[in-house]
Length: 177
Ligand SMILES: [Zn+2]
Image 1 (tube, protein in one colour):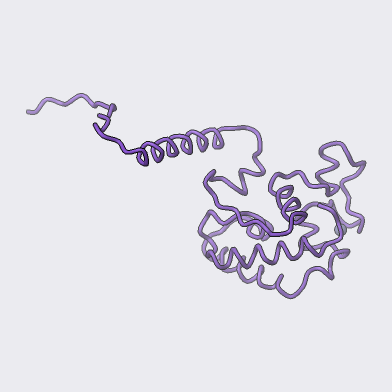
Image 2: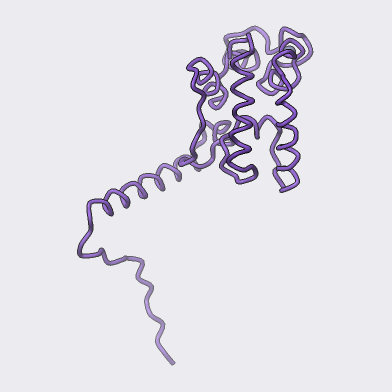
C-alpha cells in the first residue's frame, strides 16, 4: 500500500519570470486581495449589491453632471430626500409629490413629477427585465437599470441600452441627484 504523501501547498517559483509575468502576478494578487476585503467589509453594502466584483467595468455617461448623478446613485448617497433624510440633512424622506419616499426607484419609475422624462425607451427596460427574470434574475427593475452588468443576466448590448435610457433620464430630469 502506498504511503500517503504530505500535501505541500508551497509552489516552486519559476526560475525565469518576465517583467510582464511579474506585473500580471502582482495585479492578480492585488485584485484578489481587494476582492477579499470588498467581500468581507461591513461598509458600502448598498454599492456591493450593485457592484459585487471589483473588476467590474462600469459604463459612464459623457456629461459630467450625469456622471456625478450616476456615481451618487451607485454610492447610495444622492441628494434625494430618502438619502438626505437618512444622513440627517433633510427633515423628511417624502417626495415633493407627497405619495412616497423620494428614493431612486421612486424617481425612476413612479414619481408623477418626472412623468414627462420617462419617454418611450422605458418600455425597453421592462422587456429586458422580464427577459432577465425568466433567467432567474432576482433583483428589482431598478437594480438592472442601475447596476453595471456583472451577472450575465443581460447581454452587453442590453446593458448599453439600459444605461442609455438611465443616462437620458438623468440628463432630462430637473431634480438634482
Ligand atoms: Zn414623487
